[in-house]
Amino acid sequence: MKTAATIFAICLVLFVDGGALASENTAQIIKRQAPKGITSAFYECIEEAESDNVALAACQSKEKKRQDTRLNAAYKLLLSKQRNTSKDNLVRAERAWLELHGTSKAFESSLYGGEIVSSFQVMQNEIFRLCERANTLEEYLSIADDR
Image (cartoon, rainbow, N blue to C red; front, side, top):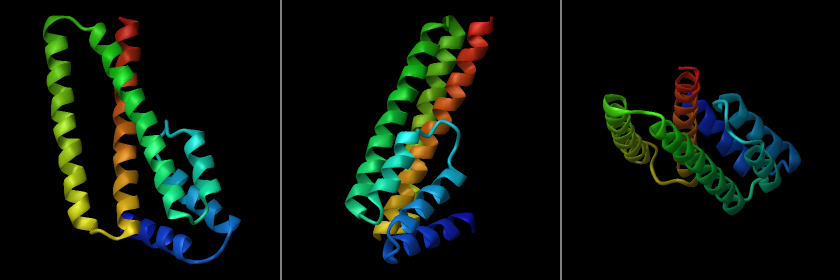
């Protein structure tokens, strides 16, 4: 239900000519649902994009790259601090997460359909998953550093 409301709100913002108010609402909607770790550059980009679908997609693409880079850095650093069984378990866990991530994206794409607003929602979900996984790995890093 929350996702349906989000899609409706984004759709409304994208298709109603509201200028700065529309872009502000879009950024606020996303920020309210976003996990910790989504960059301020992303929200600023969304505000600047207003209702330009190409610009909004570019904002998402840039944030996806930032979150993926963050995730990879956390994974590599955490992996370097592990030995033997812990290292093997981390590799298996990450492979399982990657499979879940890919399967979730495929399911969401089929569920939401091919409309522009739907593809924005699928990409936003993907960005949030990357961010949440990076948050988890960074939390594991803090535990590993304390040992």
